[in-house]
Length: 220
Image 1: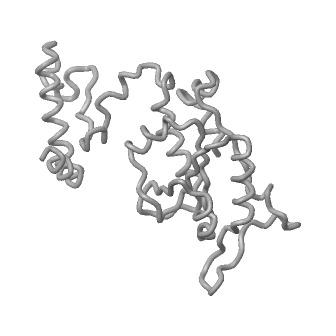
Image 2 (image 1 turned 45 degrees about the horizontal axis):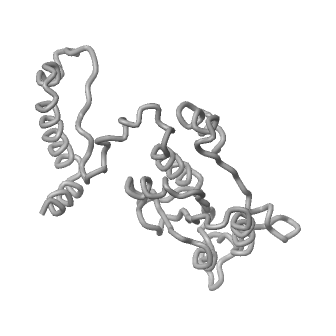
């Protein structure tokens, strides 16, 4: 799953240039059960299986023996919502360990033993944490120096200041009667910046009133 996603476009070039490196461990390889079992029924009853703490513990210890100080993140719906600020902050870490949940999640003791942070990518349930880990990998990788060909692309992105990015346009100037705002065509960068800020505010207010309220609160 991971290999196919990271063999495309920008992230593929980042791997080839050694700007990012991805390695994968299967918890089954650290199970001492003769059937390589990594799950068990819940103590006290309840539907669904839970990932055993032992294989996760052994896998993480195996990584940390070779990468002292690695930052360990568990992906689970009960975690804090992953944000752009988290992506920027985590890009400065030398080594991230992303632990993907399955079934009904983790034995809580694995989290208590090893988690530096616990993240969710949204208030919904997936069949596994792999997609969530890919989201984190992608978002973090973009903020590693050199990964984006033009680092100006990071400027003014959505969520940088609790606002959504302003609408963007390309040619033709007139598409089926819908025209690019005329100010964009006049070359006055100061006025363009002011218009973009206004459009960003309006877009945020319309699509994400929660972010708009946060922006107003932060402004004070």
